[in-house]
Length: 183
Image (tube, rainbow, N blue to C red; front, side):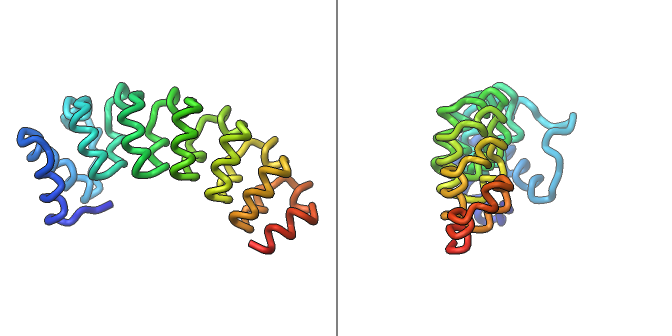
């Protein structure tokens, strides 16, 4: 997300006064594709929970620059996940394996499954939640679930082309193929 100058000023005014100049500089740097994590950057800012929460409010991808501790903070991660399921990719590995957090993310945005731990991609309930919202997320399901008729059926009903991610057996199943063709 690239913010124009006017929108940036509007968002930055919501920050505490002491953080406004830094926030402007940081978001302008992003606009020009600069690396916020190089050795000269101000890491203290990325360890400030209030700043990160405000930054996430403006742009959820700010989570990727947060300190490791904040990437492991469920409140911070959920703030980003409420904006986009893609934010799960910047959460700690522990949170990407947290079934409750990932389930909440998948319920908001099916694409969050793509960033869930390998173990959770084998969880039928979680995968069903994802594929009923975004059938193409079948791609990220475990091999076992890509061979599960119920899971694949839900995926192809939501998005017919998801059939390509099903097991070879289910790609030849008449009921599944028919459901895919209808969608």
